[in-house]
Length: 352
Ligand SMILES: *Cc1c(COP(=O)(O)O)cnc(C)c1O
Image 1 (tube, rainbow, N blue to C red):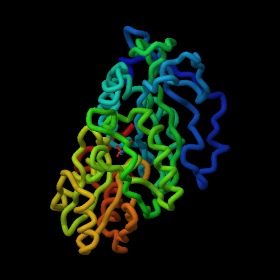
Image 2 (image 1 turned 180 degrees about the vertical axis):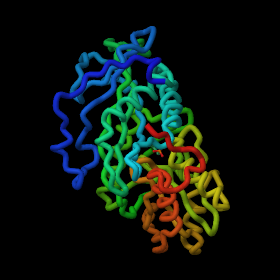
Image 3 (image 1 turned 135 degrees about the vertical axis):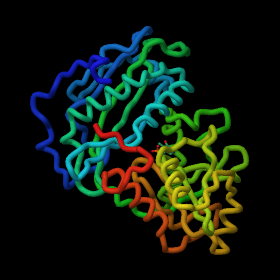
Image 4 (image 1 turned 120 degrees about the vertical axis):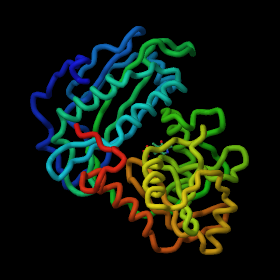
């Protein structure tokens, strides 16, 4: 795959790795030595390069800056005990960036551009994949429009880049969430299912308001009635009601999380009853009041599984039971697979 696609490589003269303190990793603050970049010139993908991580130059008329014609992905590389470096479900991220790209009129990426850029970059910066339990190398692919034209039309030229950042042991603290009943993240027919830049810009203000009210995060509801649970800011949400694991169907207002799919796959494999369906706030509250609601948690690449200990809705608040046994079991199973310690029954790992 790598030989068929020619990547020009310019290495750093001196690695920054020795200045980097692996015992004090702050997420998103440090970037590895190199980055991948490729251009679509209107006809084909070319100029595939691995360069020292650094600034790029853009015209002030760049269409992405004005109109947000831009999408991204989030994925991780892990270090096995034997020193191998492996990616978790990279083909699923590749497929999803093209689903996002289609919605935003961005050029489709060929699999070899995505996969060879990714594997070459990770291979070159493999020392940046931390080895301690819970740590990983966060990978951020991004695809954006580069027309220098401030009329509104789909761009003809694009850039695809990959940058990476070491991520520390994410001992995610349980969170207190607010069920949002005023603002919306996504609406049917909109861009909610795409990892499109503007979706995140637009959710900052409601999230900040919730934080000022003492919540860690939001749970979005449907934009029309605010009666049905959708997802959280960068996580899908799931509820264990009795013995049944319930989550919203991944329709066009919900980001189809790869962690979500992995969790549902594991749960089904363990014989847990899984329901992907509309789940109303009313049903959630009834289950919380009767004690049938055992656990609630978010799923996503950043923290894998984040337990929810309290849910606020309008002026009421609902506390969840202390036990997070199921969430812990899922988290340990996923971590074991990602570290090469547990059997990779579903062929999720891709050794670089
Ligand atoms: C990325 C993201 C998720 C989680 O997806 P993963 O593939 O599991 O990381 C969930 N919701 C939103 C809105 C997201 O952007």
